[in-house]
Amino acid sequence: MKVINPATGATLRILRDDTRDTLQDMYMRLKVTQPKWAATSLAARMKIIARFSQLLQTHTERLAGILTSETGKPLQQSRNEINGARTRIQWMLDNAEKFLADEWVTNSDALKEKISYEPLGIVCNISAWNYPYLVGVNVFIPALLAGNAVLYKPSEYATLTGMEIESLLVQAGLDPNLFVMATGGKETGEALLTMKLDGYFFTGSYKTGKYIYEKVAGKMVPCQLELGGKDPLYVADDVNDIAAVAAATADGAFYNNGQSCCAVERIYVHEKIYDDYVNAFVASVRSWKLGLPTEEGVYFGALTRPDQLKVLEDQILEARAKGATLLLGGKRIEHEGNFFEPTILSDVNNKMKVMQEESFGPIIGIMKVNSDAEAVELMNDTDYGLTAAVYSGSQDRAAQILSQVNSGTGYWNCCDRVTAGLPWAGRKHSGFGATLSHQGLRAFTKTKSWQMKSE
Image 1 (cartoon, helix red, strand yellow):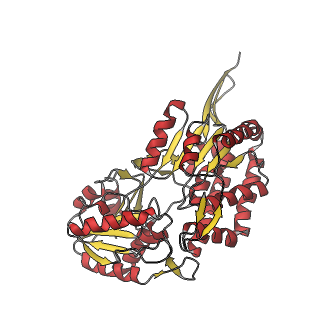
Image 2: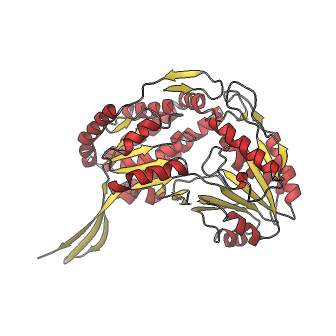
Image 3: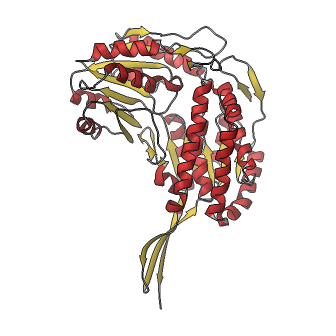
């Protein structure tokens, strides 16, 4: 397997894919070691995870450089990701004891009833390339804290980062037979689905998530899916600062080149402010620098996957054929790497692919609406349900709108953000199950009910 720099086309490294035999060897190592880890005190597990977080801080610059080299994201955004991962880890460390401890329901002399949270066993974590640290720690950190062993498969587009994660966990004091990384692409993933693992946690596309769910259903083990989105955003006519809102929402659409599950992918704007908003939006995007991700001040780096360039071209071509107006960008950039111009389309409608199918790139459609009711109808017109955002001068107005939108997260005057204390969960084709929050800690456990009566 070749690891390619998406900004230059250069081969960074050639790796050997794991086989069914090597994967089975990993499984046996994990199976032997996991019970000992489960019997280790939570305090001892927490110390190792805390040291891992410290190592992330110590090696931030080196790790950010590796992440940028294989994903194409600008260096500052790579630094931001590693720092964000440390923030999430700290929340988990601060709350693990509270939410993984036994929970007493009845505690009298005559009757004692409690719930205990036991580890699942060996967890399979099939992770994503767009935020390998952030989506990774959502899974493997609470899994390890809860007493599980982890068979970790990073995306083939973020394998070098996966190797660094594995190495730093061992440096932090984790037994090397508790977190083991599988190398490879689709074939390696297929092999994992046939193994006797105790839970599957996947981050990626709806198509792949659906396939995984169908393949492992007969195992009767937990399968949690964090999938894609076509996240809508509505700008009401009572916003206080149109230019500021335009800049913030443009960042929500284009950060990490739009390669975020919760990136803003559809924008609806009240007709009273539509023109002013669109003009400010275009001006904001024009001000951001595009270039090699290693250059200082670059906002738009390279797309990670070369296949996505064609997806973007097809969406733009179809939208323009159906009447959309191209305000900015619209084509790939002739360069050794995977570069695409930041693209803004107006005069769009919900029949267009750009407003229905996940783009996962630097492209946005902006549509005019005449009322909150029309905005709600259009926001719900999707197979996805990850996040939805409303910008308005009134919290009550925004809450009323968001309460009618079928999404796992609702944002008022913000977008494209994740916080450790709240569950990260999708609806419809955006998946099911939750990471983060107390639900995310307990997702890697199975409950046991205890009923104890005195004689």
